[in-house]
Image (cartoon, rainbow, N blue to C red; front, side):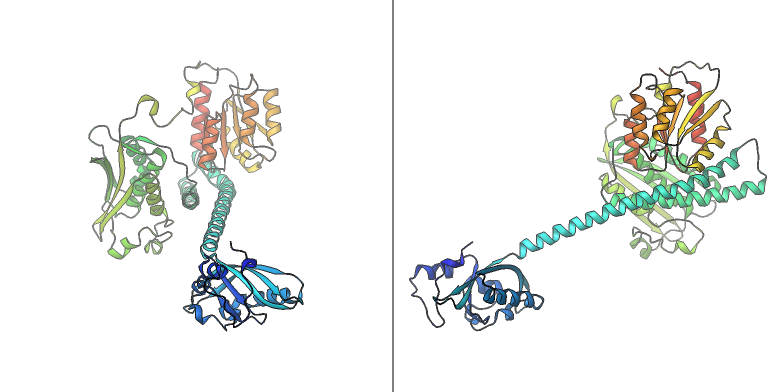
Length: 531
């Protein structure tokens, strides 16, 4: 930057010869240079200064610097001028705004030196002005981006915490409701069964809404983990259909899955593709007519695969189709008895975008709807590429089936209601004995004293995490082979993946699926002699 001190003092009305090298520098400088009287009146400005303030060079003379300055910066500009005139300091710098005649705002960095005569009296200011508008815009954009990122992270953390906090009471509600329904020792009558089913259905709906909101937030925050690879279309179709088969039967609908011709694979995340199909199939069932049909099929089209969900439901008109993928817009379904969140299809589309796919919809009122999911085709995977990874119970294969004596579950949990739920579940498997540790350190001490056949670990124990407990157990030879199973309200996929990586054989989320825990106990009981 050109220093103001190199500009010679030229008194008002004086002009240096055109050949003066200092005058040439003044006119040709790449930054604005201005001479200003102590009163604030512009004495002279170079061409670059004229360009910055958006005025002809000859029109600058006689204007007050405040005439050029943004009104919001008048006070700071006047204060700097006054402080330099009377404060015995030679210069000042500041960032301020000029406003051009057309209303455009320009950010500038102004470096000003006060010139004095031989008696020390102020004669004029000489200022060097640099246009920093682009820099300020970039800085503001970066600040906005950082603020948005912090807000997104805060929202994700809040939703994660809320998910955890809401899953804990849901665990008690749905867990004990399942126990009431399935406990053979205390069978319910028909009226009680219906009441319990209402509790379970309402709890499941609340859980689904909680999961949808959390998924959407994580997608928007860019924190949705994906494991992209070859995925079997038929396997995923069958899994998704199985998950909605009871819903279809309850609605008296015909659900048909047409297997693809030959092996068919797509590049996708297996879990998320299944989630997409379940969502589409569930919608096709919910919004169908009594006795209607839902069909799922797939076929290869060039280098893509299209999976199609067709239904014979009420259909959608053009205005509804235009708003189909708007978050929380249920297109009038909120006035019916059909439950939903209004974000399922939003999640479907955004998951597909993350997997380089897309979704298309066609529909006619009264005739039904067709949803087409397009994904890149993939070659059949090799043996090492099969999805699913390590089996949760792979360490039990080939073990001695014989067993005598009691089996012990050591459950690390600091919530008494959760403990009571698991205690009630284990009463349905009398061969299993429950021991409870209220914190991580106590769980380690109890396991070392009397090694259990199964460690059931909450992920948040107050003094340490369930992962820390599992690591501590793995460091002891006598406990390294004890299977660890998570039972936690922390349902974040990255937490589940980390637990699997640390050697957990399964990860049960709250609200607890009682049947899944019972099946797990049965499988562990068969192969309880671990290597």
